[in-house]
Image 1 (spheres, rainbow, N blue to C red):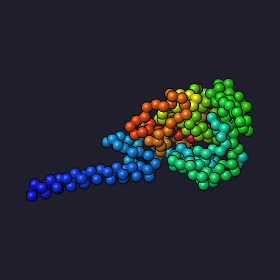
Image 2 (cartoon, rainbow, N blue to C red):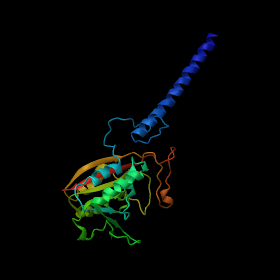
Image 3 (cartoon, helix red, strand yellow):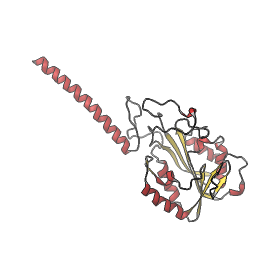
Image 4 (cartoon, helix red, strand yellow):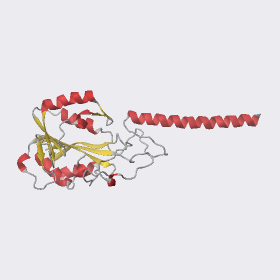
Length: 266
């Protein structure tokens, strides 16, 4: 009888220990979501992102920090240039919340505010729809026209720089087009799967992205860091078979980090 009670007690302890581990995992996952670190850890000590001091700022949310600077910039009748795009609807910039979903009410509010103070211009290598206010030129052209020098108050580029063959030339052209006191809002991947659209050349650390602009003129870095809100998302590109790189056992590319730099021209 005593042996039976010992076995029963041992089984109970093992069961309670197992339940505690499950509860801890659930608690950790919930805590991660609350802090927008989308992490589901099935291996010990992999991706442990409990709140703690880290080596650099990983708390940025790229759309929200971009909106803060763009929508709060002083002035009216400002000029906004969207590098690598001709989509004046700006759904990502104006409507994405917490890097997770599109919020229609948020978008409608931000859209009205944006167009109450900005005139939109796009820049792309083609414009088959003949959309108005679109510059048709390669931002990496070393002979980029001087017609637009000192012309724009905000220049925005969202996940374009990885596709640029000569990003150092693009940075120089962007600074030339900015007015004194104007800002460049640049978002580019630090870690994400290979995606050809139509080509995929580079990944950027925070100091790497900043250095492209620091080498081209006098600037002030207003914000610099990383958005890691979508770490475990299974984002696939739109390229050919080269885009379908192997995925890890979590069912997604291991790390999705985006570098965010907001740079003022002095």
